[in-house]
Amino acid sequence: MSVSEVPILSITGSDSSGGAGIQADIRAISSLGGLAVTVVTTLTIQNSLGIQEFYDIPAEVVERQIAAVADDAAPHIFKIGLIRNVYMLDAVVRCIKRYHPQWVLYTPIAASSHGDELLNEELIDTIQLRLIPLCSAIVVHSQDVDRFECPNTIIAADRHGHCNELCSAIAVFLTQGCSLDEAERKARNITVSKEIDSELSGRNLALYRDFLAMQEEQCLNSHDVNYYAEQLNISTRYLAQIVRKVANSSPKVIIDNTLLSKVKSALHSNKTIQEIAYELGFSSQAHLTKFFRKMTGVPPSEWRRPAQ
Image 1 (cartoon, rainbow, N blue to C red):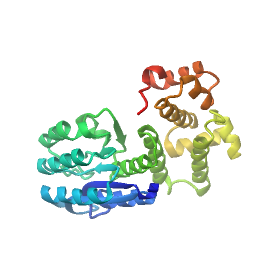
Image 2 (cartoon, rainbow, N blue to C red):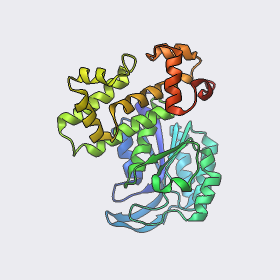
Image 3 (cartoon, helix red, strand yellow):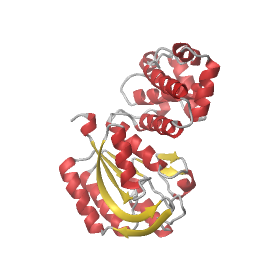
Image 4 (cartoon, one colour):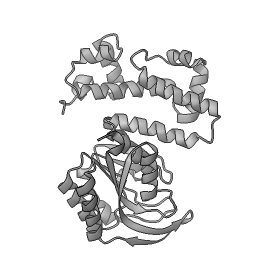
């Protein structure tokens, strides 16, 4: 099965305005070359001004939808969104336990961007107890981060649809064999680029994307900003200005985050730390250890987990 044929099951509500929900998931997953299969939990009557009415699909019908898709397509990833009652929650939890997807991603959104309540406190408590322990990661708006506890919590921007976009992109990169850390980093680069398409000139946007691709591919050649600026035939100052405008960051931070992601992925292998150091362009094991401790607060030997 090719990457494009690896199904991602989106279990969420329908957003008739197209800005979030099933519609946004299909659009985001398909745009990155992924295959979206879907289960609708809630129908909404809404437009750009907000939600006017909800119709929750009966839990039995939600469960039958999941079973029909999972039996046929065997999706590797369950991407879960809007769940509005405990019966629907129980149906989804039963299906996770029955089908054992490789990854379970959840985007809990307590209220819409227009202030419509989507989850009450009692349901949030039940979700925390029954669903989140089964999740590989959750993607939440910063305003909701204190309401949900998960070892892998990914914070999205507080704008309509960003949780969907970010989580969908992460799901696609996971189907390509990325680790969760690497999938998140790539997904953030994609969603940030989409946001600024209309704000930058074509040349600046192209340079930013070339920089991302280049430091991803040539990480072993150099960890130095000057190297990438020279390859792009621009000054380091101009590269810094572009990256600041696009990502509110610096080229060095992006390079270091790429390198950290590659180190973490390598630490899941059986390679020694010294082998990883030389493979990833560090001058020595001590150099890698110093870098890793600076980025994470712990040495790589303490962070690493046994290879799966």
